[in-house]
Amino acid sequence: MSKQPHLCVSAEQIAKRVIVCGEPDRVNRIAALLDGVEIIAENREYRLMNGRFNDQLITICSTGIGAPSAIIALEELNLCGVKQVIRVGSSGALQVNIALGDLIVAEAAVRDDGGSKAYVSSTFPAYADRHLIAKIEAYLNRSLTMPNTEQHVGQVHYGVVRSHDSFYTDNEAQLCQHWHEKGVLGADMETSALLTVGKLRGMQVASILNNVVLFEQDVQEGVGHYVNAEAVMMNGEQRAALAALHALCND
Image 1 (cartoon, rainbow, N blue to C red):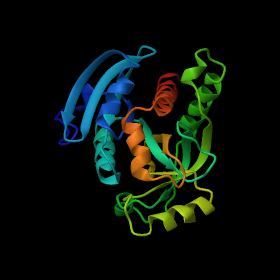
Image 2: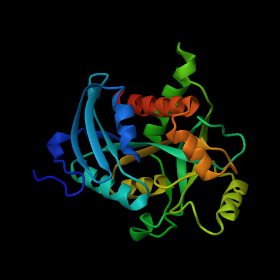
Image 3: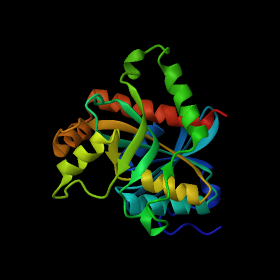
Image 4: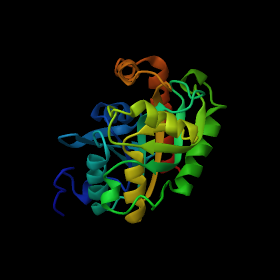
């Protein structure tokens, strides 16, 4: 089979279950949890690695920032026969009780991204696959009783997130305050597009977000700490990755 034009892989090269993330280097960090890792493609923002978890093949794929590049990845994964996708991403909190390194499991998303609206109007809901959500929740509940609890810190929040297209709009503070008042948990740039297009393509999709910015904290300051690998947020990322791996690889 011919290779996809952006991911540069063919169907026989990748697993049917995939973790996607924005940052290419996060692919490497998640792949460190796997056995028999090999890089299978790298092009632009897309880096793909294969490995095994619980003796099952899994693919990790970066998507870059924002809905358009995430949708391209999802569409080409779908063309390769991928059936299940979980995003392991980062978010900024929209509620004061969400700490750095806490996890947000997106049950649904406000569709303030432009990419998914190219497919269907914003009246179509963006919601996660309930079977994947149940498996994610089961693992996260079990993790509370595991040893090495320093790797399983932080609370888990379930609910609605907001996906958007810019950090730097002129009314960003007002937008965040609006969605804070509506009870939305956090914001990212990809979840709503992945949930919407995944649903339209008959895929099972979910999203776990590691919180890297406190509510009303400066975005550059929060993301800067994350880039510098502050321990609590790295632990949150690893916990999100493990939840995704267990959800995809434990039937």
